[in-house]
Image (cartoon, rainbow, N blue to C red):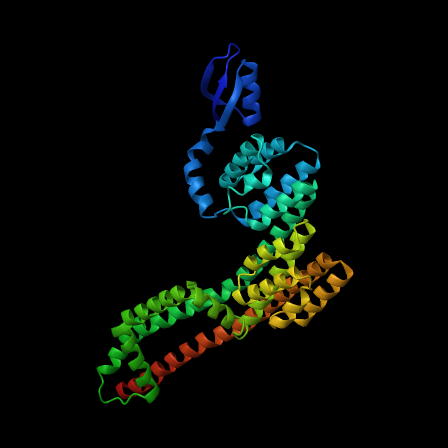
Length: 406
């Protein structure tokens, strides 16, 4: 049974503190009230024990997206039921299973109880609640439609998590296959082949085929200089990551990544899907267009696409349309530009953006699935070809050796 640590006042106004075991926080409060204690603060000792760890993990952004989406949906449901915000946050903090998120919500509840607005309280935890979340919450509070906005925010968060999960799941198998192929080849060339080649070395009168000699040379290089190969790979990765994280390197890489064969199309589709869905969600939530574009430029996670968004913002600030800069950038497909243009003319931009986002989410899934289905047989053929060459390089000399010994 959970143990709660409390501080309070007795009936005669004296300070008191202690611990009490109860089924939940609400039951603990009721029990203390019956004992004539006015509760000033009460906390689960288990949560208190993990508070320091939670603070560290909160700063590193360790809350899963699915947990955040579920919490947001619970918050929207309770607010829609006309439950006061402080009571809503208290209930959600108790229901959330993730201790970090629960701690953050509980702290937000305390700040709201002290008179702060919800979006101001959420902004204290930027690694959990990003700019989109905070801006939507602010728009909901100002318009009095916080429940509707939070529900849309939950749907947006769930869709983003689903897209990320699709890509991750589809690419997991090819990555595992690539690692397995590398380990198998390394193991064959460093462990198996040297032992077999030593047998052939004991019979100098046997003339090894040219392909066996090539395999033997490669194996010898692997055995003697494996450390150089490993060091080269590690150093190359570190140099690449350092360059990619620099300002100029990031700009160059973002431009190059859009032109990569196969992967470039997926990167562009993901960026377009993020742009359209995020902008649709923010505009539907009542966030002003210029503020929404400021947020969206960071969400697309690509400098080239972000530059097009900046140009669109400048156009709008001058009273022009958003479709022009998107078309001029050359990175937004004609369908997107056309739908955005129609949405601006008809005043239905949010719905048009949502339709485009749905279409591109589907295209990303289809493209990833097709690439995965193409990579799997290619990798299978690759490992089969390597094993076949090694086997032939061993079997042919082995037959010659057997015939001579026989």
